[in-house]
Length: 143
Image (cartoon, rainbow, N blue to C red; front, top):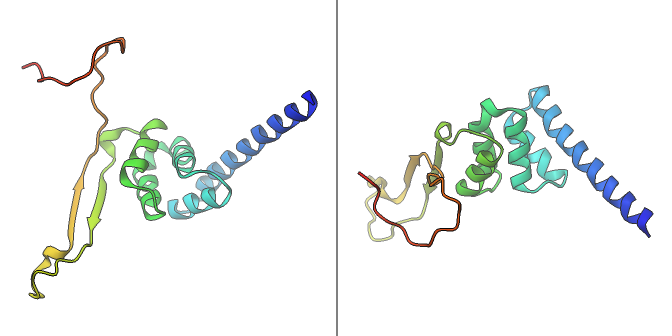
């Protein structure tokens, strides 16, 4: 029984390494990030794993990884969080979201208000440097 469990654990460990090598080799081969993310997902990685492995293999292209992940179905928040977890600089990633909902209150075709787009940098909250044993609740920033 112990041998079976050990063999299964070793097999899963090796499979993970093979997938990581696949993401790295896709990037080294020069495949575009859309293809890298797609291949990673097809090989069984979760979206977060695909993003993290791609960013770890090519940190300078974290923006392209995030963009490809969003195009593949990740939410902007999910893509950004996974990229940051892999070591990407949050300030270097611009996340763009589009709202393509239609506004039926006006038939004016010259009004572009039915499609809104916003771009911004999403950053994690600043670290308080505390021990984590403090209470809840926010407060005003010191001035």
